[in-house]
Amino acid sequence: MCRLMQSVRLLDLIGMVEIVKNIEGIRSRLPMSVELVAVSKTHPVEYIVEAYSCGQRIFGENKVQEMDQKHEALKDSCPDIKWHLIGHLQTNKVKYITSYVDMIHSVDSLKLLLEIDKHAKKDGRVIKCLFEMHIASEETKFGLDRDELVQILESPEFKSLQNVKICGLMGMASNTDDTEKVRMEMRSLKETFDFVKKKYFAKDLDFREISMGMSSDWKIAIQEGSTMVRIGSTIFGKRIYAVNSK
Image (tube, rainbow, N blue to C red; front, side):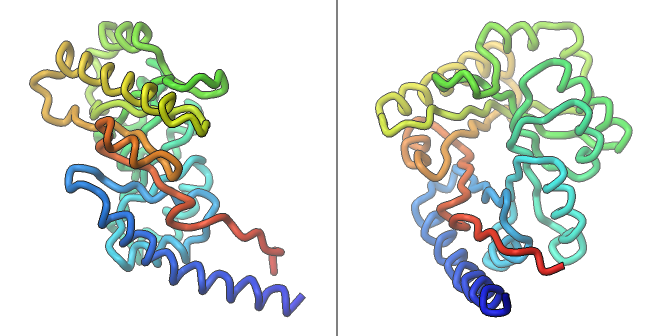
C-alpha cells in the first residue's frame, strides 16, 4: 500500500510540473480574443493551485457539489479564481452556487434561468450566463434549438429578469473524428450567435461570448469563431484514481 501511494504521489508531482508547461503551450497558440477555461473536473485542488500559480484564473467544473467543495477549499488562498459551471445544471442545485459562480455556460431552459435570477437576487449579485445550444448529432447532449431560444428571448418572463446577464452561447460538437462534421456544427453555432446578436443584443456589448471547443477540437473552434475554449485533459491529463487513505 505504501509503495502504491508513493507511486501515486510521484505521478501527481510529475503531473503538476506538466500543468504549467501545458497551459503555457496552449496560451501561446490562443488569440488575444479567446479566453481559456481550464476544466478541472475530477482533478484535485493541488492541480488547480498549480495552474493558478502560472496565472490561470478561470476554471470550469461540471458538477455543483465538486465545484462547491473546491470553492470552499480555495476561496482564501486563491481568492480571485473565477468558477464557471459548464455541466448540466438542475434547478434544485442553483442555490448552492449563486453566491460565488462567475458564469454558468449551460442555461437550457427558461425555468432554469428564472431560478438563477431568483437566487442571484437573494445573494445580491448579477450572474453571467450563456445559453446552451444543441449542435451535436448525439441525442444525449443537452441544449436548445434556435426556435426554443427565440421563444425564451421573446417571453415576458425573460424581459423581466434583473439578476442575470446573458453574455452569449455555448455548444458542444459531436464526439467524432470527422473534423468537417465538427466544423459544420460549430459554424451553425456561430450563425445562431450572429442571428441572435443582431436581432436581440445589437447594442449589448456584454453579449459577445461563444463558448465552444474542447481538448480534441479547440483549434477548429477558434477558426469558427469561438471566444472561449474549455480545455481539460490537454492541461491536466487523465485522472489518477488512488485508494483513499482516510
